[in-house]
Length: 219
Image (cartoon, rainbow, N blue to C red; front, side):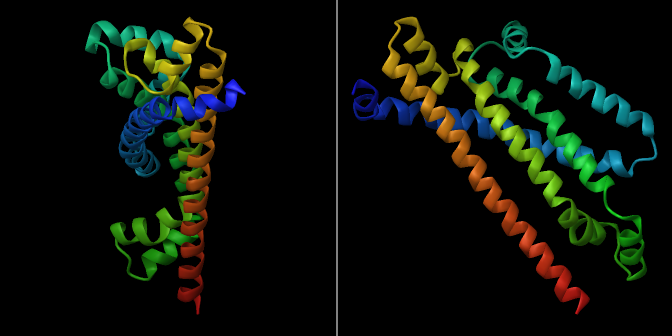
């Protein structure tokens, strides 16, 4: 019964921690999208192939560093709190978004690009009207995967004073408060599931819009 009552007695703490968790995760994910998506597009189009190896090598290095180790490295550099946690999660978000963006644009049939060029589309029009809509499934797949990673990794951010649901999880562990551990862990899981469902709905909406646009153009 305590496992049910904990949601009623600690709902304010759970809600506040969840909001902090969303802010930390959302900021890191947004930064990852802002940096990785344009970089992925650039790597597809650039003639300097060595830049691809450099970009993927650097982002892969960030991905392979253990979460706790990266947080520890950032402490002497930028201190503790939400900012270093966002920086760490941002670095982790780069590789999956970059890789999926690159794969999405690389998978586009060159004949489609040539047809758009023949229709008089300039580079910007080809990017936003043709290439980006076709790459949406890959982009959204990377963003959804990264979102799950970031939400789970954000639980460790409490170790450097960033707050979030991890604070309740580790607080419960320190005093062996099993109902609190259960409630905060379940809230974290539900947060990841709900956000993934929302992103899946957004992906379907964007895909339908792209399909309908293609059908209108062909007719």
